[in-house]
Amino acid sequence: MERDLSKLSIDRAVREKPGPDRRIIIGASVAVVAIVILALIVAIARRAPEVTVVSARSSAGPSQSAVLNASGYVTPQRRATVSAKTTGKIKEVLIDEGMHVKSGQVLARLDDVDAVATLRAAEAERAVATASLKDIEVRLENARRTLERNRDLRANELVSQQALDDAETAVASLEAQLVVARETVGAAERSVDITRQNVENCVIRAPFEGIIVSKDAQPGEMVSPISAGGGFTRTGIATVVDMNSLEVEVDVNESYIARVTQGQRVETVLDAYPDWRIPSKVRTVIPTADRQKATVKVRITFDKLDPRILPDMGVKVSFLEGGSDSSAAIVVLVPKDAIRRDGEQSYVFVVKDGRVERRAVRTLGERGTDVAVIAGLRQGDLVVVSASAGLRDGERVSVRT
Image (tube, rainbow, N blue to C red):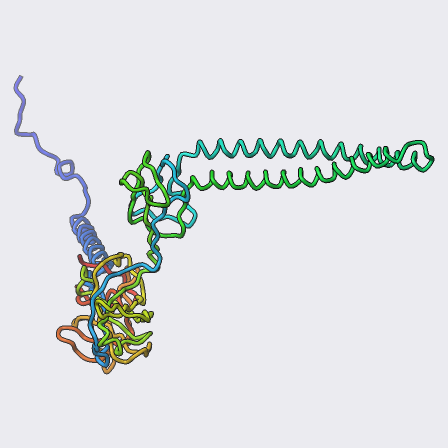
C-alpha cells in the first residue's frame, strides 16, 4: 500500500519554539562587560603607586669649614681580655666570635675537681672544730656547777681550799679553751669561704655587656692569669668589646693642637663607607704629648652609633670651625628631584611604614646635584625622588627596587 507523501507538512508552531529575546541577551552581555571593566579600573586605582626613594645624608653646613684633617681608628672605651683568676685546665668554652653577652654571663669553665676536693676538706675541718666547741661548752658548764658546789662546801669548811682552787682553775681553763675553739671555728669558716671562692673562680664570666670579638682558648688548654712562657698556657679566653662605647682615636700633630677644643664639631668618614659622613664631636684632648711622634691624642665620640661602625676601622676626621658650638648647623643633602614646590613653600615626600608623608622643608641652596636642607629632614629619612603617579599625603606606596 503506497502512502501519499504530498500531504505531509511541518507545523510552524512546533518548529519555532519560544526562547529568550535576543535583545535581553545582548543587554546582559554588555552589563557583564561593563562590570568587569569597572572592576579593573577600581583595582588599578587602588594599586599602590610605585616610588623611587633615596636616603637623606648629612653634611656639615656651609658655615663650617674644616680647620684640620686627621686620620685614626675606631676604638672602644671598654675592651677586656677575659681570663681566669686561677691557673687551671679549660673544661668548656661557651662562647664564639660575634656572640652578644650580658654582664655576668658564663663564658667558660675550668676543671674544678681539685678545688671542690679542697672545699670538702675545709668543710670537714669546720665540722670538727664545731664539734670540739660543743664538747668544751658541755665541760665548761659542768665545771661551773662543780665550782658552785665547792664554794658552798668551803663555806661550811667541808672541803679544803685546794679543792676550791682546783675547781676555779678548771673553769678558767675551759673558758680559755672555749675562746680558742670559737676562734678555730671562725678560722674554719673563713677557710671554707676561701675554698668556695676558688671553686667559683673556675667559672669565667663576662665583666660587662658586649660582643665577643676574639675567642682565644679551647677546651683542654691550660689558662693562667699570668704568662707561664713556652706558648702552652693561655693568658686569655676571650676579648669582649662594649659596642656602646665606640669612639674615634686620632693623633694630631702638636703644631696644630691649638685648633682642637673639647666639644668641637667633627665630621667623621669611615674608610669602609667613604660617602657616609658621620656627625661627631671632640670628647677630650689627652693632656700629654708623644715626644717621639710629636703628636697629641684626641678622642672623638659619635653623635649616634650605628651597627656599621666596628672596632679598629680606619677613619678620616675633619675638625670644623666654630669651636664647641653644639648648635652648628648640620644640613641634610637630598637630590634636586626630591624637592617639590607649592608656591613659596618647599616640601618633600618621606616614605614611612609603607606610606608617604608630606613634609615641609627649609632649603639652604644647591650643592652640585643635591639640595641642602636645614630643617624638616633628618639623616636616613627615605625621600621620594620619582613616582609613577601623583602622590597624596598618607597614601600607601610601593617602593621600587
